[in-house]
Amino acid sequence: MKKIIIALLLVYTIFAQESLDRIIAVVNNEIILQSELNLQVAYVAAQRNIDPKNPELQNTILTKMIEEKLLYAQAELDSITVSDEEVNNQLQNQLNFFISQYGSQERMEQAYGMSIEKIRRELRDEVRKNMMSNMVQQKHFGQLDATRREVQEFFETYQDSLGLIPERFELSHIFINPQQGERLKAKAKEFAQSLLDSIKSGADFASLAKKYSDDPGSAARGGELGFVKRGVFFPQFEAAAFQLAEGEISGVVESPVGYHIIEMLERRGESIQTRHILIKVSSDDESDLDAIETLNEIRDSLMQGHKSFDYFAKKYSDDTETAKLGGSLGKFEVSQLDKTLRDRVYGMAIGEISFPKRLELDNKTYGYHIIKVNNRVPEHRPTFEGDYDEIKRLAIYHKRQKQYTKWIEELKEKIYWELRI
Image 1 (cartoon, rainbow, N blue to C red):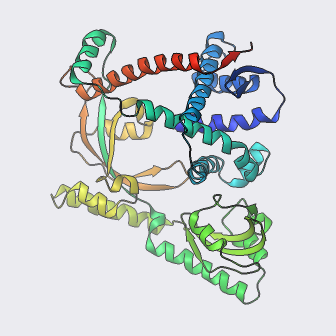
Image 2 (image 1 turned 135 degrees about the vertical axis):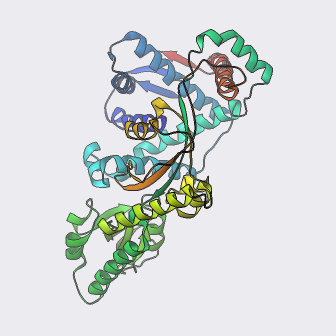
Image 3 (image 1 turned 30 degrees about the vertical axis):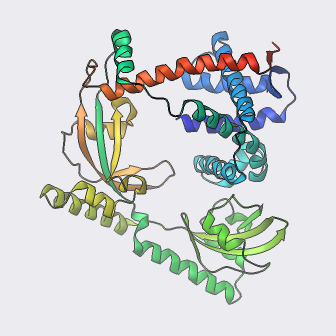
């Protein structure tokens, strides 16, 4: 959620910069506009379902915005820098997130009323400043820890106000994406190759793109993608595209979204204009059944004591992030689980493994998985020994907040700032 909020607030800065505004605060050589405050207040109010005209909310957010500017100013004083490559990578992650939310680059551009290149230009400086601010915080508080004595003192002081520790689950899963099957990938690649052969035989590239391309953002334009610099598309796409001469057509290029045929239309400085045909790897009933059957076989093997969940996750799971951890998803409070997953695991005992279930993903793809409940701890009052890790986490957070507040006041003493409202 934090990542999503930051991403959306970055988008809001685009619109704030589009209009003339009154300056409501100055920090060092940075300004805060009324529209920037209004947009952040509106977003937070919507998230919390509260009145955006609430003076306390406005003051809290303005204070936070001033703190962010102070952090950036301190980062400059500390000579903290980020490379263009780091900014480009972070910016691309933000853009990929936006595109996934809207379904295509074209829809995102329509929503914000500007090209992706303009969005990149508007966001670049804000992304760089946020990265520098995060780095200066990491420099001052990243290694903060708490001794056992400090944890005990925190627990004794705040024990009565800590409340109940919510029920927790420790989960692992093995996920299979039907679209990752070699049969389906081979089928998609073979079709892309047939289109490439047709183009080489004289077929019109644009006509084939309009008819067959799975990229909804460019198909209607004959596959044209406009002028872009490096850092906009997938690395595999760019590696092939940027080495083409004008008028040259690539071979079949694989990327995380499928197979591309790319034509170089024009070079202009560091920018290129290309068009492409995208053939996605599509699942079918047979691939779905294959995924379910594989998971059932894995589950049967586990129930019979053959190998471990860790072994099968590392060997078969298509969730690359958890596969290397033996399928571990981590620990979750009940409230952190979405309703579907909560309903699925709530009736399971420790050590139990579910039957295969469909799992919908945020990027509009899906797959099937089996889940194992490694541990579950009922709701309870915290004890120092039994919940030491959680209490230590809270103690470190409390310690960090105290030091952070003190540090911000010190920054206000040495860095110029003023309110103009």
